[in-house]
Length: 149
Image (cartoon, rainbow, N blue to C red; front, side, top):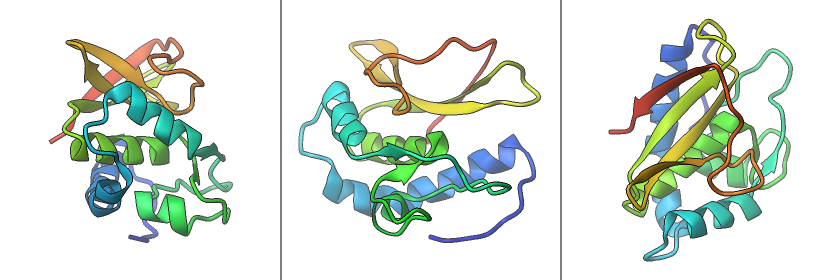
């Protein structure tokens, strides 16, 4: 789904991420192996994504089909933290892995990063595809959790 909507605030961005997650479910259904666990899913996504900053002055929120098949850079799987989070959440929903969205930054006025967390063996674990390893993310002063569906 492609839309061009001006930035309003973080609540609106989360709402738009939700729309992109919904638009990603069918693609994720074909992408996720049957009976995958969170760590395995992380590595599948991590090996198929490439970090690229948004173009200047634009906040891209790509659905999974856009990110993998028709993105701004012409590189399959290219996106930034919000695009990765959209794909991660869609895949977790398909795989029945409990997940949530985490918005972080140095302060609540200007969050600077977003990632997914998954419930893995009873513990909320970072599923941050910007980081090289499963279960890792950087520490931030501000953290807001958004429950998914």
